[in-house]
Length: 322
Image (cartoon, rainbow, N blue to C red; front, top):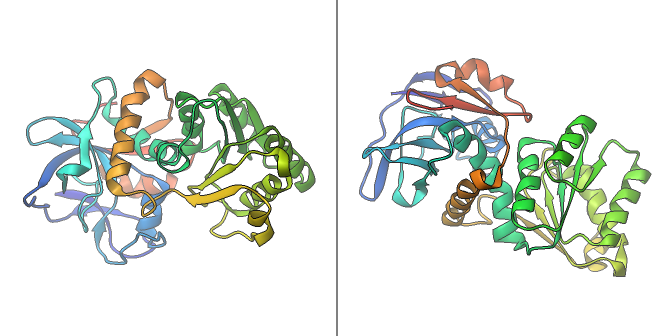
């Protein structure tokens, strides 16, 4: 079968032939119609992600949309290594697929599942967001961050604060439901003042897609807000701005900050699949918006380096719908 094959660390996938996966007892075979690039997919392909096996070759992709042998349309996740979702067929445990709602097309379902799941799981599994609480999304101008703003609203957040570097993108995020936007390009003193003002009013949950310097300033500002601040559940999801931070111990000792992560390992896989089921069911009624670019899988070598955070690249195979 044809597939997007990663043959060595640091090299993009190539479109070539790979042996067919054979289902075992308790597994389902899926004819794939759509599979999206995500930061974790690119990171695993490069060999840098913490969940990478380091074994080559393998098929790229963690999830996608397709049809079971009986024709049912499903979303699926985590095919058995060395197989991935960017192939004509995939095999997954029966517990790793779920139906796609009729009103959601293949490309949109494949595009929205991973970035939407990142905040859906962070809100519901880690932060346990309650209706009426205030959410701050650090890094709200990327695909996942924009969805995090929309999902916070859908789940009942009373106020949403969004940060980002691009002023035009921040204005677009405001149109998606953010009450307050904070440009990260401000000078450090002004940025810290903006952060402290929000924490003084009360921030219950932070969803962090950036880590790095902005996360450092957020944590320090939260601590300095002092007694006026409410306890904060700070959920670390991504590290676009850097893999490490410098955090004084006094920040945690002097504040009611709960620092946690949300990702592969901190949330069991079956709970991730459950979260994606909730997300897909809510996508239509919630009016969630995501920019997606469908590309035939045969063009993976050209499209892979062109992928960026402004829209989701979705590789399509025969039978997919847009």
